[in-house]
Length: 270
Ligand code: APR
Image 1 (cartoon, rainbow, N blue to C red):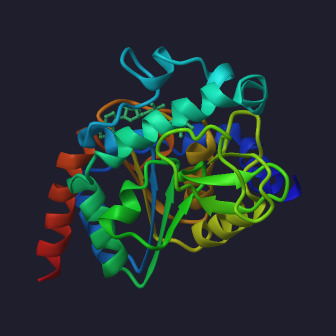
Image 2: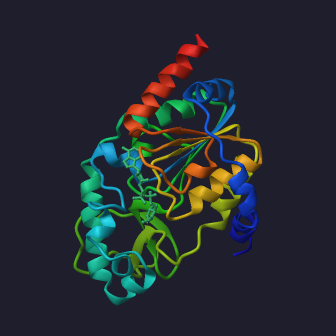
């Protein structure tokens, strides 16, 4: 897929530059950059929802310690056992429906209101960002509430919280549907990548919140923006694959770090 390759491969070609760009600014600089910014991009992963009670993917209690990726998160796994895969996603859908946005989601929603140019790119499928109020959001790994027709590709809101006998079918053509989730081995939506690429090339500040970067897309996004002059802030209690490319690291839980950071930005503004 041409567009994806052009964005990501260009960055992969510059490993030495990656090393030389390691910097460690203070939180004061981050506050100043956010106060001055006109365009802000937020990139989130599972960690932003951890304080809402949704487990992250990796680590001892992570989702991938209780389920096999090849069984539940690949097209081949779905082909082998669609009923089991649907049941797994519907269980998670029910869990997510019971979770509430936390203060980190609230700050990210407030940022969208504040900045003239804003984009939220989330790997999360839990819909907590939209429930917190974000509208300028690209869910690059899909959405737990949606299904996609296996025949005509129509994406639709799934009305089911438990699996019906005839499985879940397309409202248009009645063919079977699958969860509208980007699984391992599948390509990102090139139109979304193009939009993100365009935005990152002109954004002032990028916040990368709660992602390990083991799935490397956020690392490439952050680095691409940095190469175009953006200031990169990481919010994560642990070192991640993004860390070496961030200017500033807030090593706290997002639900604590983001409200404090945002309060400081707003205080500076008065
Ligand atoms: N606040 C901020 N970050 C946190 C918090 C918190 N309260 N708790 C944990 N984290 C951090 C962890 O330190 C870790 O770096 O969140 C990160 C979660 O990493 P992963 O579990 O790997 O989740 P993520 O990066 O979102 O995974 C990316 O991989 O499995 C696929 O499709 C799935 O979207 C997912 C993708």
